[in-house]
Length: 376
Ligand SMILES: Nc1ncnc2c1ncn2[C@@H]1O[C@H](COP(=O)(O)OP(=O)(O)O)[C@@H](O)[C@H]1O
Ligand SMILES: [Mg+2]
Image (cartoon, rainbow, N blue to C red; front, side):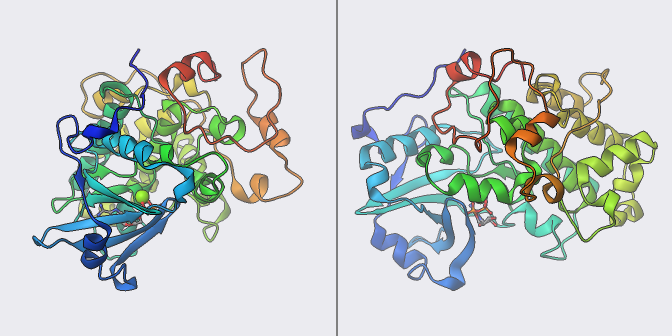
């Protein structure tokens, strides 16, 4: 088992493990982002706004202004968290260049990714079209990045927020996962969880949504949803579509049962040509990730092996599970308890969990094995 993270001495925060953590003055970042101007705003997520910045040496960066109060986290703790994130390095993870901590301000500086994020493309905010090879390269890259976070890095990290807007794309459309490790900055009572979480419900594994059971398997579920989005070029939930198409995993399963999975594929890609065998294999892998029982979802290393045909896919998926927001979530008659009844736990000693999931920012490797993760 890998060691969980402990707060390190912050005196040496200028040198990360292998990569250096740069320190930027607030003034420099203010200048780089034209005083955090609206025109430089790249987007706003649960952790705070992100601005495009140009440093004095001409380098483009993305500056994330954390929506944190100073009282919530001391400087030393902040710097050691930054150092920890900087030490997690992989070609499919976005590079954290450094940070700024001045007065109440806490900012993170990332490399700027020229093609921004995947949501802009697959949700049609740009008219950019990605062919199958590029889409597959993106899917495989995300899988490798997640494999690194879950299995290979020195600290085991559950991302918790795998979604299209957290997949950043470089100039060659190579993907890098963004926002990993950030949940650690936010204390339990922060609205982060309720807003971000509710906003990305369609990606959320049922055992996490209902019982707050967080493990790598929750990321693997989100990955499955994301793969279907990339192949079909649509959002996981779209209430404007005909009823049976509204929830992407549900729709994919219906097509699978009817042996019509091909209908899931983005029509533009169908016209432009693709290798059907590869696309079908990838959809099958996605369905394996969406299975109701977390423990039968394959680990990321197996997913990478299946995607690259290194192992034969022997399992056939069982019916995926999904929470449909319209009927179960917003309807007040449906409490956590009634939703839970749809997804019974295998755990003998567990009492019903009627509260929304806790923010498990203090999740560590040891908790995952001693807690409720294993037998979901
Ligand atoms: N390093 C980056 N390079 C380019 N664009 C970025 C970068 N980081 C974030 N963005 C853009 O800013 C948006 C907002 O980011 P974020 O605050 O992480 O919110 P969210 O991930 O919830 O959409 C992202 O969706 C992406 O389009
Ligand atoms: Mg993000």
